[in-house]
Amino acid sequence: MQVDDIADKVKEASILLKSIGNEVRLLILCSLIEQKLTVGQLNERIDISQSALSQHLAKLRADKLVTSEKDGLCVYYSIARPVVMEILKVLQAEFCPPDGDNNA
Image (cartoon, rainbow, N blue to C red):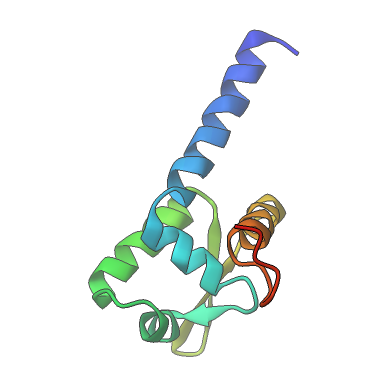
C-alpha cells in the first residue's frame, strides 16, 4: 500500500473517530443502535435543544456516519456504515456490560 493511500485512509479514520469522540454525537449514535429514529424521538432521549441536536445530526451526516430517510412528514435517522455499528458494539461491551458483569 502506498503512503498516499494510507494517508487517505488515516484521514477517513480520523474523521470517523473525531465525530464519535463527541459525547452528544456518541449518545445519538448509541440511540440509533437498535432502530432508526426521528429528530423528535432523539430529542426525547437526549437533553439538548432541537437546534443543537439538528447541528449534531448534520455533522454526523456530513461525516457519513448516519443517513436520513424521509417517510411522509417524518425524517428518520439511522447508522450509515457497518463499521460504525461495530465500533459502537465494542464500546457498548466495554463500557455498558450486562447487569452483573462489571469487571471494573
